[in-house]
Image 1 (cartoon, rainbow, N blue to C red):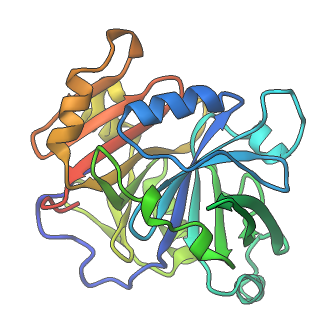
Image 2 (image 1 turned 120 degrees about the vertical axis):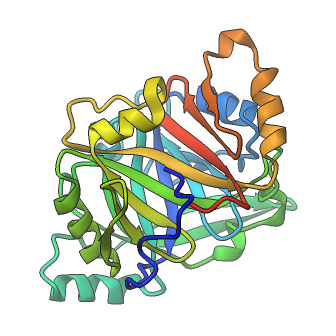
Length: 297
């Protein structure tokens, strides 16, 4: 995913900022907590949404990765999660006004659901407050790769906390999301239309959409396999899927040390490419690529 040449999308329109990316954990949240903590991430305490889902967050400088799942007691809530594949399944853009975002999308005849408001309790210094959100979601299946939506934070001070933003592996921000597709050009144009960017063809045949400090990179299955080899995710029969999350880190050596001393039973598969490290998250069909902050994406 790394691009060591000059960026092909320099002269394109800039896409909307990413709010966060989502990894669907299913009903294995305790296992996910152990795995991601072992990889050097600091996770927020377990959250419980009013919609019935549960989560841990990996808070970065200005964006984050959400590990979302369902209680393991068999509660049948949030049907879209039950229908979603395990692994990276959510691309979420920022919205400063979800109601206006909804009106704008409806005006463009986009297939979106009405604004959804929800919350989850957060305990800080012995006091419980509600972290509140509003989202506008595309209807399930509109994007074969997963769920795409917009999120407005009504209480950002309860989400971005300095005590949650320091990670032993040095994770700082989302650098890119790689999307694998049977029709890269068509998918790139679809994502560009949603986020306001411009899809530009790269030197290796990929398509890149430049965002605020990140890129969406759309590639073919063949290119994906050539880049990541045995680390690739399972397509699970999908024509398109989220194949990798690239994360900037200022402690690549620390991550390398974590992986070199990992328990052999952890089943972590990884590849060291010098200025970046790619790894497959065992049990959760996700691929993470850590990029040295001095290396361009």
